[in-house]
Image 1 (cartoon, protein in one colour):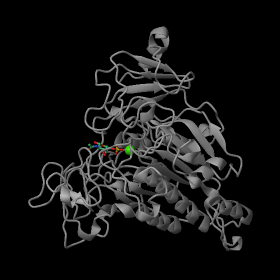
Image 2 (tube, rainbow, N blue to C red):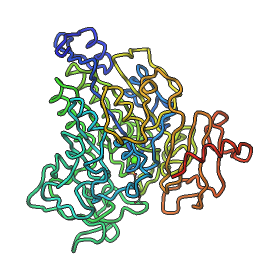
Image 3 (cartoon, rainbow, N blue to C red):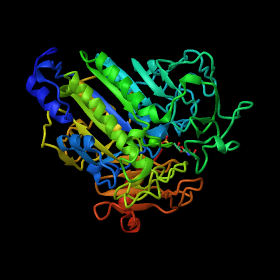
Image 4 (cartoon, rainbow, N blue to C red):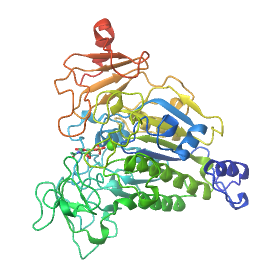
Length: 513
Ligand code: NG6
Ligand code: CA
């Protein structure tokens, strides 16, 4: 099938992105059995943050247009309310809470997924796909925490867990080291500025946000984030050096787009899997100048606009290469939204009636649905067409991606691989309206919840009702079991645990570790 000319479909994909290129220039390289897959993972993008999910004060035309053709999910759940455990579960198909070392990782954490583990990238690779990871990583690098030499090739990295190519940020934009890593080495390494990183102590003579607030010309912290200063923004952790390799926050979106586009070009003739993770809309939110003012919500809204543009650039490249008709796009987020997450960026004051978590209670970190209910749009051009888009209420958890992708590509996973992942391909493709029986969700303090189509159960916990260290977020903690009937209200308010002890008993058994 490869090399097949299919001009009609090319025209259709052309219309999808509004990118006008003469159809005679196109060659569709169709391999019906092995579609390309691009998993686009936004950071801290809430259920309510896209205009197709009811966002106010910002528009996301490109993503909305995919939603009009594909499946827009109302019941998709991240495994965890923070990044590292959420991403761990996506890539391995194992609940992060089964492992002790999967909480929000420092920038110098050792590689959390071990080479012997089977990953989503291994799965695609085993079916002859080229694989890549681009953007935010946040799952550790190298053999041992704190012992990486950032001036030399890393002894273990993503090449050991199935990725043929990668261009990544080690952790988050608010954590050092503030450099990209490309295939095991710091990208654009600057020999004149060797890199040192510590999460314990500062390096002699290096300024910090705490001691030198006058150097914070781009952004100041609201809580935490007062250590090393890079690009006029203070971060978590200490670093020295980096020179020309240091990123400029305003260029991160451009930088990951250009590397993704390069990968698409190089792999246009063979099936590929791309794990594409944006920094948007995580803090520090610092979108490029050309997106400033695109929303009325300041940098958080403008970062959403930058995210939409980012998606549009990938789609345009697929179209240009004539492979849009054979590339499945999945867009989702690693956890729920947060407004003030540690920088003084006026995100809260400028919301103007916008609800980042949509109808849900709670935010990132929380056991309430706002922590883990995320947007998801799946577009499979082989079976979906303009005007045929649908909204699906099917229950889906990110932990189920890997088994579902295995169904998609007809792979075989080794015994013991992806132990918690369930096959749910028909739900992902909009052909099954129910999805999985239940999903498990983990708060940032490891409180587990269970969600079914009807119920939400939160296990009892002793923690405080509000986060105590900065963000104004309800944790969802309560010493009593909580049960909410989600068919009555999506905002978890009326605890009906006392009226349904049988349901509480049944769901609580699923949280046993
Ligand atoms: C928190 C950070 C927050 C963010 C989060 C991880 C402080 C005060 N806050 O500890 O800014 O980085 O960790 O976010 O340090 S995540 O989306 O990558 O999980
Ligand atoms: Ca996140």
